[in-house]
Length: 278
Image (cartoon, rainbow, N blue to C red):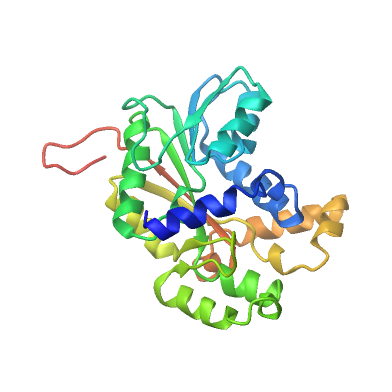
């Protein structure tokens, strides 16, 4: 991680905003849809799940409540403290770097990597992180990887959230993202990230030795709904929002419209004598 990027990450997450982000309307869609994708490949409980970069623990708690044993690691001490404060007996949390984990080889029945790639500007570090997730997974185990879409800063931030009203340089920011993937923080404590194209995410996972199975857009066009909170409160409207996201989740020409992408891959079950992997 670049030095300035590491400082930006710490400054943003130490504000404590992540704890409630998934309770906001778009965060609810992100959480529900990410759980849907996870449940498609998650082994039956009890399984050991490594939640790497798991933030304040929303996914870890969901997994533990369903009978899984969760090994939670996060780079931010505050997040680890928040997870520990929850006191769930099935969760073991500690500070950890996704690029060099303190976990044994083949020790997890599933690995969640739902955040670390956001904050690695350099391709070699992202590939190393994906390779490390694969190392921790048992042969054949699923590895779920979240990424921010290359076009999220423009479509969600610039257009839908009208950040141009608060950030005079926002047009320049989105132009840079679309040229090199780097979203630089626009204010002290602001969010910075690397933003992927769908093809790039697939290629990086393959370069890390993972077998790519699926890639989906998470939220669809939910981010563009000004009344999203009201719709989620109405059962019929909530169903329409989620069904619409599912309907377009794998359409190649629409993948990048979703603010988040989730890739499903697996650690190869064996290595052939020629050096290729199954």
